[in-house]
Length: 285
Image (cartoon, rainbow, N blue to C red; front, side):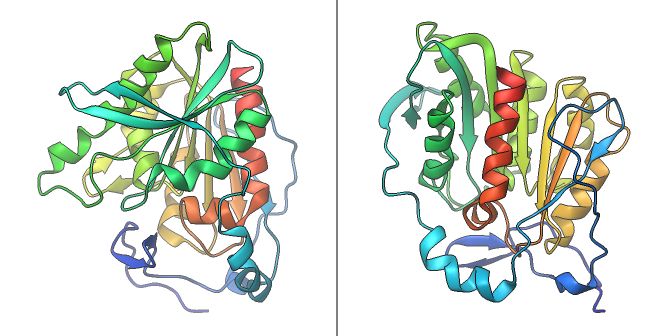
């Protein structure tokens, strides 16, 4: 078994535009948890574990050319709204067929765009949940950590935009889903906005370049959170385990054996997408 000697938050290495963890361990070296408890809320401090995406690495690699692309039927319309600093923001809005309906704001990885969420947004819309995918303020990290922390204000602006559409969005039935840096920023936004009912974090980091979320997730309180990561993504997996411990509210954990990170993990593991959609059906319905 090869143990990584140093763990680094994702974002230090990029391949084809995707953030990936520098250190990976073979799935055969991981003692996989075997519980298959059904989706649902847990009592405080309890964590449900389920392994998804049990497919051989060779099969995953062979399938990447097919599943890594957004579904051909994915659609939506561009909407604009104003950020706190006056900038005009553009989002991809996929509407539920029967409205008003719940809504989920989707936040991407660093260096990626809202388009990464098209497939998930379509699945949410098919489940009669509005989906609003947004971009991060920039494609690279700012020099000032405080400026990076302020990026969550664009998520708050998206939530305000949805709150202003009562004909489309049920008041108070808004969730956040973020990937990698987007997951950390989603926690910052949810801790600051009590109207956010539920969150889903894909490949979060305890500390992403100064955006530390353990205390903020406790501040988020008794509201439910879904935590997802690959067991082949050491820092994200360790972060999920620590974030789920001693939680003040329901914390659901979903593991994957697919060696990927963030929205790349979702595109390669359809079981996680199914779990994410079911999560918001359960917690926003």
